[in-house]
Length: 395
Image 1 (tube, rainbow, N blue to C red):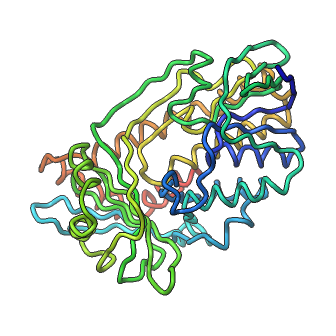
Image 2 (cartoon, rainbow, N blue to C red; image 1 turned 90 degrees about the vertical axis):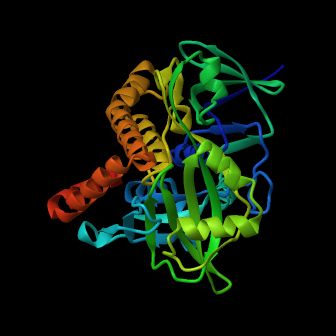
């Protein structure tokens, strides 16, 4: 077996893993990033991730420090207003709207939105310009042997020694399983559909989350394409309904899209394939082990509400990286400090998004009425509204 060494080995070549590779490489570390799949960096690829990611202000700051924001910004769409709309009455129509405007708390937008497949393309392009990152796509992580001073990791027919092994390989993390770390999972009987759409009215840099039942229906602005307005859609529904929508012909699905959107963007038509996946909340029992740290969905999973998911992941990265400047890389002190620093924020956001999702799912008329009153009350109080916006940003 061929033996090699690196300072950091990252399991997972998704957005979180690739961004982590860039961040640690910029600080001078040697990095190897491994993923069992070949990257899908074109929207037409059958394996392409058709979701989009809205990078909140703190996440954008992390990307700037990492050196990748310059690759992203020309493709991004600013989100200047987060609009919550309640359509929980008897008729499928919006009863009230609550706008949260970024100008109330900042001179910057809340977030910048980009398609996930494009993010992966630009990250790989950036990595290919760096001498201290090695990408191993189409390779699987095998047996992990932990030692006090290093971990030994089988990758294909090679064995790597590393000072720090980072698990960034998603909710079904094989590295987490190999390290025998259990998880707690909450299931909602719910799935999400993701797609890009064309629409007749401009989005005006407004992201709208419409609450009715089954889960929120969220529109997130994308750049216009060939003179046509575009947005990405995340549509959460109870699993049987979501499955039925996923299997519809485009003509029938477009009709359902227009009904559920309450005409906020004018006429809507599919502009891409549909993706579908189950909605869960999940938390790893611990986010570190010997010379080992979990980040992103390997550590925590939440429903796609309020742009919290990947932004939590980048906070993991930012914390782990910053602590490496004051602690020996991968040492017990480094990883205990990382766990301690992230624990409260992870718990708070899992509980908060779980509560929001359950409120959005409800079919009970009385609970829908209570949700409407709560939305009006919270939005109507300026100090409360500003506090909620700052908490949502993580500032």
